[in-house]
Length: 134
Image 1 (tube, helix red, strand yellow):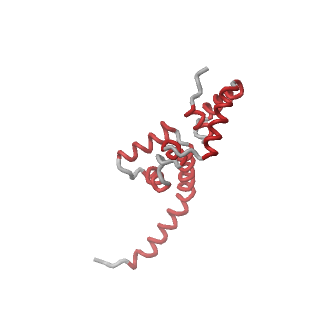
Image 2 (tube, rainbow, N blue to C red):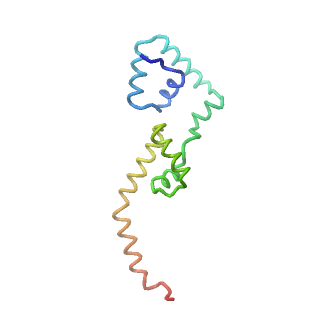
Image 3 (spheres, rainbow, N blue to C red):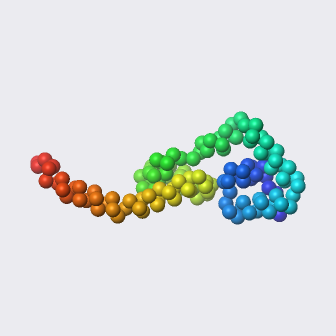
């Protein structure tokens, strides 16, 4: 069995691991008293409010994009560098918070696709005669 690092335990506490990794950590916790003590110590640090740069960075999710940026990513309108970063963040890092936000945005987009498009088309058709002529 591979070693469970302090960083993996922190990600476990933040619910930032994949299902497979979470199961691996939980199995290791059941088997190792030392690992449970390490997890307890980490929990105590979190309760005390660890204020290291790394802890604040992870806690505040400073690498996570805004919902607006995720919407722009979904539409494919970001510059290439930003689009690549978000692809990395979502697919390689696998950020569960951003993946949930993106899934919600996709669901809203699918829900609004048909009726909203038809409504916009009716508005355009009803107002086309009011546009100034050149």
